[in-house]
Image (cartoon, rainbow, N blue to C red; front, side, top):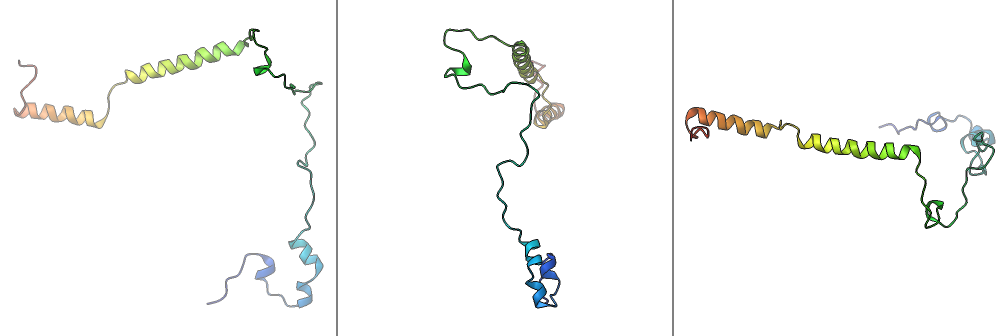
Length: 126
């Protein structure tokens, strides 16, 4: 059985000259020296606004001192009523959806056939 060969060029091609295998140019290609880099090599992005978007910590929850009422934004009521209204409509629709399970159909079909054969009495004939 022949030895398995790697897909890497340096190990799959037989080396004819031993000095070529140890040349610094080939080792540099396959083992580049480690490079010291900062955390990000990209320049910081600018938002187009003149001031910083960082809010320094104030010590209050959401930056509102106790006793002060929070001012609601315009989208909050639409989101709250839309989300919970849609959730309520989904629950009601799920509660009133028709039963289309195979078990219910099989039970009804078995009852109908047994009543037709006279094994079960008809519940309507009391």
